[in-house]
Amino acid sequence: MPDAFTQRLIGGGAAGARSGQIIALLAVLIGLGAALLGEARWLVADDDNLWLAALVRADSPAPLRHLEDQMIDGLHAQGVSANDILRFENRRDYGGNYIGAIQLWRFASSWFAASANLADASADALAKRMVIMFTFGIGMIWLLFGLVLARLGDASLQRAALVGLAFIALWFALVPIEFSQKLGLDKSIAHVLPDALFTLLRPHDGLSLFGFTGRNLFTVLFLAAMLSRWSGRDRNAALLLLIATLMHGSYGSMMLAFVLLCDLLNRPSNLRDPVYGALLAVMALYSFGSETLWRTTLRLDSTAWIGVVLVAIGVAILLLRLRSKQAGANRPMRDVAVLAGLWLATLPIAVVMCHVADPTSVEYFWSQLHARTLGVLQPVFAVALGLWLMHDEGFSRGLKALLISLAIALPIDGLRGLMSSNGAVPRLTASYSNLQQRLSDLPQPPPLAAINSQREELTYFAIERALSGYPSALVHERLTP
Image (tube, rainbow, N blue to C red; front, side, top):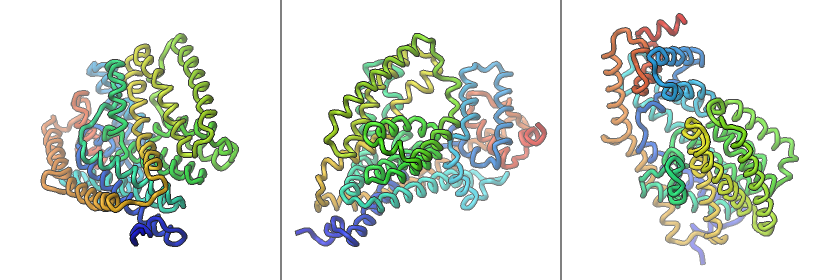
């Protein structure tokens, strides 16, 4: 005879709704806690995060772009290599890739850390601003995930989502090792299989469900979209995919092929639904319209493209055969089979391209594509594993204890990691103090040309301070282009 807690979790009607809310609450606490733990581990004042802080600080794109153009012109004048300058050019052109995430971070920065936007902001204020804006983004996205999970209306799917999420969160917390972000594709083919298995178990923090960047937020909402899809709410799923794409446009274009193939093979009626189609069309327009890496990647000769087309045809044949063999499977497992099949079938393309494409394409596209998609797919596979393990059963006493323990321990550990004496805030404060000192040590007023390509973090710190009115030539040159 199940106890009262289990009855609430597996009950029907009003009790079923309450159980869904309980499951959603536990899932949000576990997911949010693990994300805060990830933020506490690897949030640093590096070039990428300082660039995001500059994006958040910019009231409009024009002043920021002028400062970035000024910096890039200075690097050209110094004779810096084109490959080093490319990193700055890619960032300059990539700001429109995160419009949803930027708005979340900007709101938090303006309302909860306004002192950091002043010209004379202290290192402590700047550190707290970075923590607050990323933590706010994490909180909002996980809250949306919880609302989606609570309203699924499918108790078995809700339980599987909680179990799958708890499994990867526990692994994430206990195994802080960060595996490859490139699956060994930048090394040799011998590294691909072990690195892929490691990544499937424990993606790099930057590619996982638990983190604070736009791609982490995308991954959370992609999982929410797949759960909605599996519960029969396909239009909701399409809307969630669109919102996810606003967090990271490139990830939207990257995962659109997976979703469309699932529709083509498992749910063709979606492709005839005008609302569903319109939502995905907007998603495609934004994601491909904001993508700028096409300018520096895919520069291949005709022979290579012929090979890509032939491999693509082979993939299509393989997946069509896969559809006929999985006709009796349930919807989640059919989708998982397509997702895994497409990932595996396209992996040889990446292996080949890493040997025939130009170095820039290999560095920024082919060697990263499959690690990033696997990071997005890993939680989806974890939920499918949860469905298989649970077999529509309720939670055992031991599993309930584990879930509740994780829901309590992970948020506490995450907050402690952010706020403790050796946590993220003190660490960032020390980094900002160092940057302020380095900026003040430059010849005054310090032009951006004085900051070379090997000091990226100082460059973006200087740009962010200029946008906040820091008294230097940067501001003068910004106002008088």
